[in-house]
Image 1 (cartoon, rainbow over the protein chains, first blue to last red):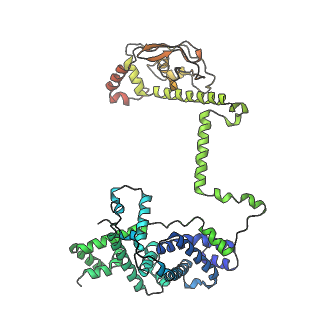
Image 2 (image 1 turned 120 degrees about the vertical axis):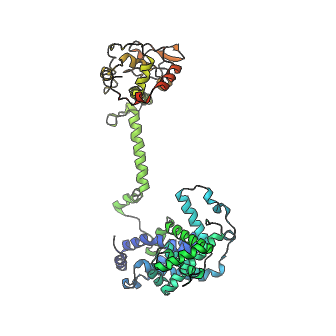
Image 3 (image 1 turned 30 degrees about the vertical axis):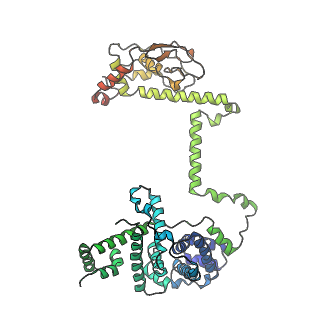
Length: 189
Length: 286
């Protein structure tokens, strides 16, 4: 499999198939970052398209010496998410009624016996609801570390903050997330 | 250093990721034992981490990649020339398509085998519904008879029959049954009976005669198979409602039915069998 850096070089020389391969490799990761941050699949789809369009126009600014291509792509995505968040902050309803109400059916989920896929789907939904209630700084830190599996050094590059700040945000984000899930009645005691 | 709840919270991620020193980890362990709140918090965050790390990526919408490519590269030109004929091929290069096609092919093979169709010798006449029905019916009878023969060959069945007919001496093998030209691969029944000490062909015939394939009213007989399910055979009530009578297709005289075979004696015979009887090698002398 050709390295991303080589594909970028081919793209810059006008190779459309190299661009297709880059899109194919990274669409899912970009979409997941947008989806987990916004909590909305339609917004995530639109934002993902914007990310790749921005990437296509600024591909010549990528320098392999600055870091791996996925990290650079994550930075572009995160910056766009921050712009989007600021633009839509006033239009957003942050705490929906659904999030405030205890979800009794999930609370008693241990009484059911869902299969593995159903359990994963349920967990994904619960987690998304809880993430929506975190502040943006803590939310992005937890998503990058625990859902995108980035290293601390990479997160430091993406967020442009010291590594100590990265660890502190991740730690606080995890504790807050656990408390939110507990308040929602979704975590076993 | 006295470890407290504030410190526990501050170092929680390092503790859970195994990045604390041994002494600090031990301090947290000791604090957990005396603090229910911190013990619960550590458990909750630890559980949350393992859950999050188990999650897979959410699947993106199916059209997202195409939209991205169209927005960046412009409308994609349709393939020209001979490549146009292969534009649909990416559809088949998917695992689910291959699995589906393999399942369909396996079902087709099973159906063809069950229908007794030989693809290399298939003619238009073979597609006649009546011919298809006869073929399927014949194949079904063949399969059933093979199954009956297999069951009849089991040791436990042999033991049951032996106990039901203890007074009947082993009979000489009768004349071999008429050759059934529709079963060229069938072994000579005499060979089969030779392999079974203490058991006669007549007894095998008796057993076969008592079985009713598919409830057609036409008893199956060793080496004889009914070719037509519509032909009915005259039956006579002999014992307990069992139908015994002529063999198939009127090719041979019917064999007598065993008047001693009834449900009551059969069940008592089965219950009387010991484990030694069942475990005895099949071909050794009783």
